[in-house]
Length: 406
Image (cartoon, rainbow, N blue to C red; front, side, top):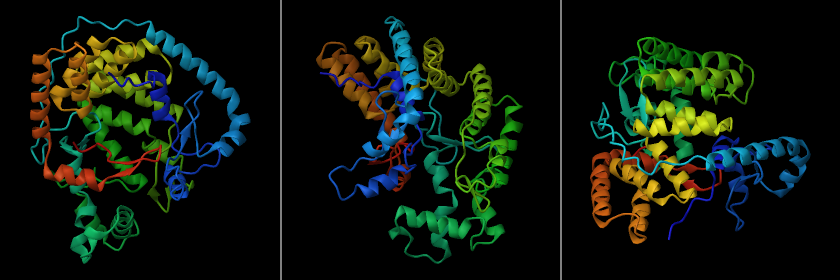
């Protein structure tokens, strides 16, 4: 039997967009998890089950914040119900053939096949090269710390490594400015214009590089510009945060802050990137339409993203088909995901589909072979190491790998 994902499309969107801190007291997920570490309840923040747009660390905060949240909660919940109703009225096409996967792209540095997915690669705006997240992570300053007399680096915790990184290569670190720039240099052109950005000026330099490449018709540069504005890391957005210690502290950028102006600019750049045939841009556009609870445009962008080979779009459409109990349509998308080696879940779903008669024996065998071959092309010792090193705490308090490296 199938384990159908009961989280509807609008709820998934609200969950991903909900601020990752308690709306009542402002505590972060890690702080809440540490407070609960001695109890049986190991979980962290819980979403409001009516609107899914805010999180709470516990019932006391939820009750104290109820009066301030009640009006917004009711309005958002109504929008969510209307969005789900409109989405359920859309018929999925069962006659669509399996989308042919795009030609596999190799990482420009390690030459292994690039993992599928919009968030699993890094774009260098200085020279236009694209590398896997593992190669980018291994070329950042943190991997050179053991060259500076710290023989115990391998035994340090993740937080200790971060602190050592900032104390060495941060704006006020012990390493000289020349040494910091040397370690920040692009592994291809050695430019320091687009590596690890610490300050507002670093982010502005990256933005200028992206604009230069975007003006030449580079769809990936347009996509990166859109993400910059969407997450509040554009130069204009960061300038407005000067003096706010939560976002900018001693010249170092801690995090960006989303704004309506940034979202509008992001939408513009996503559209330009999508017009040049970038499937990932269509997928991000679908997320923005879902934020606005626009079901028709959400579904239209999602199908266009899938047609251009976006693995995330196929995953979304598979979940939507399962929710609508259109199992045959879902199996088509899971076949694509297996073909590109996106996730083990696709093979599990196909196996369940075979048991229930939705997938033939030949289709299952072919998909399993394709998945195994794709994973062999994608996997490497370095990527596995980076995945283990980057284990973190999710918004629900679970400790898990980020899934960004393979």
